[in-house]
Length: 415
Ligand SMILES: Cc1cc2nc3c(=O)[nH]c(=O)nc-3n(C[C@H](O)[C@H](O)[C@H](O)COP(=O)(O)OP(=O)(O)OC[C@H]3O[C@@H](n4cnc5c(N)ncnc54)[C@H](O)[C@@H]3O)c2cc1C
Image (cartoon, rainbow, N blue to C red):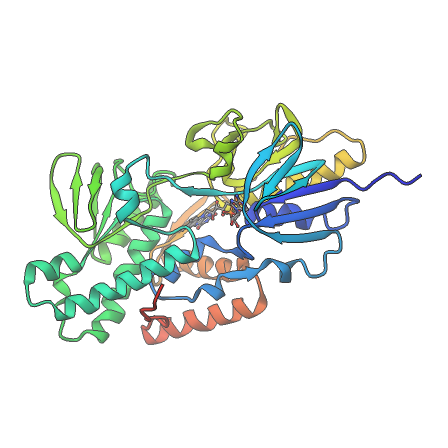
C-alpha cells in the first residue's frame, strides 16, 4: 500500500516562506501556503513607495503567479488567527487546517515599545497601505505649506522627522531629502526650501549601529551632505501628531513623524505561548525546529536564532531566505528518514543607499561607500525584485528619475 503524502502548512509568503515552498517543489509532500495578502512584498523598497519613487505594484507580486507551475502547492489567502500545537492544526478565518508539518514564516511588525501616542500618530513603513499613507501625507504637507501664510505653521508642516538611524531610517531620510531638493523645488518654485527640515532622531550614539565604523562615518557624512540633521542620543517620548517631546523635556512642532526605530516578531508568535527571546522572537533549536514540537519550524523575523559566534541573527531578508532554504532541505531529509542538520548563516554583507550616487557597503569583508556601492545597490535590488516586468519597469523608472531629477508617483490619492 502507498504511504499517505504528508501535509505541510506554511504560514507566510514573505522571504522565508517563499524560499521554503520553492525548495520543496519536487518533494513528496503536499503544501498549503497561507498568507493574509495575495502577494509577496519586497519590503526593502517600501520607502521608495513612501517617497513617491515607485508604485506598489512594482514591488509586489501575486503569490498565485509565483507558484503557477508548482503542482504540489495550493495557496490560500487568509489570516491565521490561532495555532494548536498539540492538536496540530491552524485556524484560518473560522476554518481549520490540519498539518503533519508546519512552517511559521509570519515575519515581523513595527515595535512602538508600548508607546501609544507614537503608535497612533506616527507613520510606519511596514506594508503597502502604510507606505501609501506616508506618501499621501508627505505630499499633502507641501500643498498645505504652499497655502500657509503663517511662518510658524509653515515650518511645522515642513519639518519631517524620522526616528531610528538604522538602514530603513537612513534610507528614508536620504531619499526624502533628495525628493525635496531635486523635485519639490521644481513643483513649488515659490517655496523657500530653507524652511524645510529633514531630521533623523536616534536614541543611541551612532547611525547604522550594526555597520563597521568606517561605514557609519561615511553614512553620517553623506546624510549631512544632503542637509539631513542628525540628532544622536535623543530619545522621543511622546508625539501627539503636531508636537513631539524628547526625554529631556524639549519639544518640537512637526506634522510628520516616521517611526523606523523597531521591529518585533509577528502577532502570531505571541499567540503560540512558547519561549520567546528579545523582540518576541520564538526561540528555536539550531535546526530551526521548535524544541518541544520538532514538526514545527520557524523562519525569518519571527525566529530567534544565533550564528556561530553566538550573535543573534538580524531581521533581514537574506537571513529569512537562507532559513527558508535550510528548512526545505531539512524537510526533504526528514522525508527520507534522515536527521535534520543545523542552520548555518552565511553573512553576505551589508548594503544601504543614502540617495543618488551614494551608498555604503560591506561585501566579502571589504567596506566601501559612494558611487560604486550605489551601483551595486541598484543592480542587486533590481535583480532581487520578483518578475521580469517589474524589474524592467523599476529600472526604467529609476533611470528616468536619475536623468531628469523626477519622482514619478507624486499623486495624493484617497486611502
Ligand atoms: C521598510 C523595510 C525595509 C527593509 N530593508 C531591508 C533591506 O534593505 N535588506 C534586508 O535584508 N532586509 C530588509 N528589511 C527586512 C526584511 O524585509 C525582513 O527581514 C523580511 O521581510 C523577513 O522575512 P520573513 O519571511 O520573516 O517575513 P515577511 O517577508 O515579512 O513575510 C511575512 C508574511 O507573513 C504574512 N503573515 C503575517 N502574519 C500572518 C498571519 N497571521 N496569517 C497569514 N499570513 C500572515 C504577511 O502577510 C507576510 O506576507 C526591511 C524591512 C522593512 C519593513
